[in-house]
Length: 624
Image 1 (cartoon, rainbow, N blue to C red):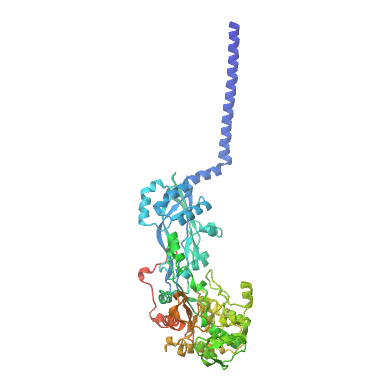
Image 2: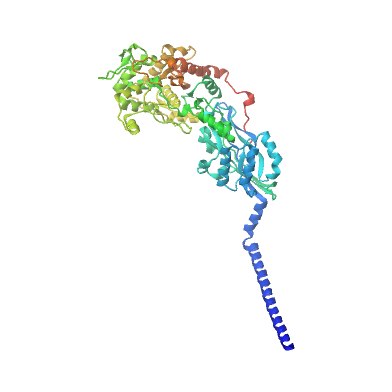
């Protein structure tokens, strides 16, 4: 028994020693592993983990650049920046940014569209700061302050944000800035937009986005575990965007807008000497300021569904039958092709019929104008003269001549989304409708009806070309200095014209006689010389032999009223086009508006120009 007991003890002792050795070996291996890991972290991975540790206590915050201001030709700021409080979410400091966003919705009264844009931004750049709300109200600030301890990853910052001090006055030419959406993000350099969620959407804001934006800066800060900033470590300031000066004149723009108040229409005024756009109005207009912080779905829907279409840029995109405004250009075509001279006459019985066709194309004057030459055709806007001229000229030659004045193509103005209008031809109709051209369609085109469509900008541009005796200077909204203007004039091409050089002056004089003794005689003044042409474009077809009765037609089917002209005749300083949708007669409605604009530009402005109330004048941004 004692022997067995001793043997058992020895066996147990050996087993204990073995286990102790294994345990010691495991401890040694574990300790060795720790040493190896420690060595790896200290030697090989030091920089990686040091950077991560540094990131936990420091952050690199983007500093958005101040957007460039936009001034009118006189130095009045028409698009500036002003300080507001903005709520910004920093996803890097949050475990669940989506949950935080959900909690912020009632605090900042976020719309469905704003929420969708914020979520899209979080998805595109999960670690970058995202603007939650621009221009926070005092009520929103109070609601957030009560709950601020629960939102460590959300900060209220003072920032400069875009503002349009004159609301709807320049909306259709300036455009506006809005939140970057998915489509925008696919087209931009994201590094340049660090720290900002806004981008130019339309108008000058979009066309000159690259110059207005500027370059972002960066700020390195030390933070605590909650993401709160403790101190600034390094700052690289942002570079402000470039200021722009446009050729638009505040006073003329104001007068033009006042003349269209309560009406649908457009006015474009151009300086023929350098192509600078002096006024660019589309009415009704809209206030672009709500688009900056994110317009509500209801408010946008109201603008979109308004039957008067305030979002529609009539001056740039509205395509209308130009009516009799085209007759001076077409008359020059008759001279160019040798089909007419200034002495050639036709007899106007009040209608014209194509050979072998009994259909009568009526003149606007019952009984006609009798014997008519080219000058009288302009002064009295004789339709029959142009029916006959276009029949002899043919649609191909008519098309080839009119495109020289820019009809059927974009003017090249420095604004996005310009429409080209339609200068029809047999090829155009075949491509568009797969139908052949009919002779009667040429007759309709000859008086600016039928398929012929033009924008108010095109009519103003063509009028400026005529005022320049055929010299084409592209219109532009950015102001150019004297040297650049001289270059534009020197490089301007003159329309290829086969007639006498003095035909241009004779046509200008015929338009002046239109104002003195013709259809626009109601706006004549002895104070300066005006050349003009009235136009009345039919909207609703009238049956053969029927009489146009304005009182029996819904107002939205009344004729469009046109006026185009320039002044002074001997030294043109302003050329313009006035369109009043469904206004009725060009002589009675549109021409008087043109006279008011001429009076302001040539008589009032040199002595007492209109300026905005001082309270509305914004000083340039301090950072510019």
